[in-house]
Length: 168
Image (tube, rainbow, N blue to C red; front, top):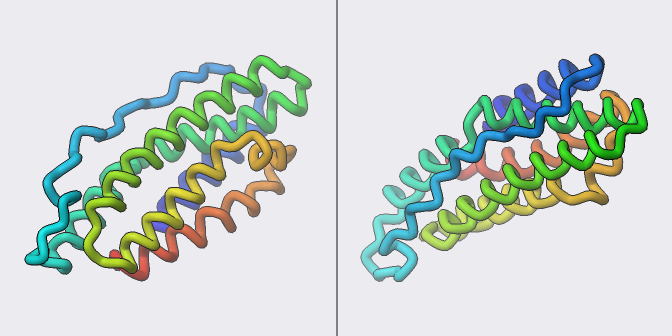
């Protein structure tokens, strides 16, 4: 998961920020919010291994490659907009990023509540925090050039490493 998220975001940032890109802020909103299963009312006979496998599979399926690339593209648009002093384009890109990261965080929060394994709950919490951070203005303010992509990589690496330890 780590390599996938990081690579897709970095490719999209570099590919977008170097050009005078369009400010199309359409972000995919294909979140899967419909699974608030009975697992949230924890029964003592939960199969922790099966629960962990299910949530790991669902969490990986939630964050789709094209959506990750779109978030990276939007970060690139922020960089380009700042270089062009285009506040409207910057605001649109921030809104698109925030919509996607908030959607992911919400759906992962449901999975976190369903998780029976404390290590998985903690890893999901770390990922949720990273995604929420990515959508914050003060965090996004730090992106002024493609060289700042290392900051994004560090944020995501911590979160995805935690998930990889639990989910493999």
